[in-house]
Length: 114
Length: 117
Image: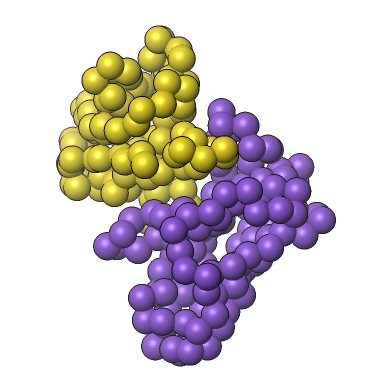
């Protein structure tokens, strides 16, 4: 069974631009969550999507948004990029929103802002 | 809001020895779930072990076991017979409602474990 696939693996952008990251969950998984990982702040929860609806949201500004498609694939968008947005963005999927369902992570997208 | 604290930023252990990684958390919830994840240099986060708060028995997965002390809000990870492949960043994580209606995963800052030959 294929794991969680994130594309692209690396991305370089400049301040003010916008970016879209993609995540394909494990087949059959309907919940997709996004996390931002930085050396200073660690892993921080961005949002979770289930059945094409955002079900949970972390404490990030509105520049961070996402969506989920009918095939459970998810995209995350960041507009008006800032230097502080440089991070590893991880996507995780699970079967449903049951709390005992562990999250399966992708390899992440390394975003660098110049 | 829940917080997860890993007090050991870095640890090292000799191959074949045993090491324990500490984790404490703060919550007012009674039903929640705890996880240990491992992130090797390849950066993919891998689930190591999980524990349901309503279970008194400590979870075990091969060489990995936990010491779950609910009253003390402590959830330590013990790695027996350490192997070079265990070298990674280890994250303790808490799954709770965080005052909302949906469960959210909160991570600690991580402990970098190095296994020396």
